[in-house]
Amino acid sequence: MHIVQLLYERSVPDLSAPDRETEKFEAPAFVFIFFLLSVVLRNAGEVVGGDELTLSRAVKMIITHAKMRKTKEGNWVSLK
Image (cartoon, rainbow, N blue to C red):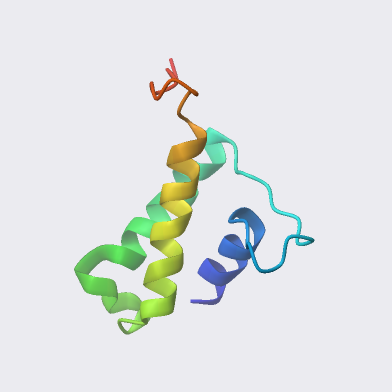
């Protein structure tokens, strides 16, 4: 649970704390992070004891990074 919290705080902007610096992970780095997040989300978060805050953070990280890979017109960026 702690690693998900650290990754979340580093990459997802917090509207209530605009001075907190965040950065998006590059695609190759996010591949490894996505694997971790998929393990956390599998079976309703069984590996994290169903902790809803951790599950919510995992989903928000995926959404945030997915939005980053869209163009302004709504098309997906080709990663080829």
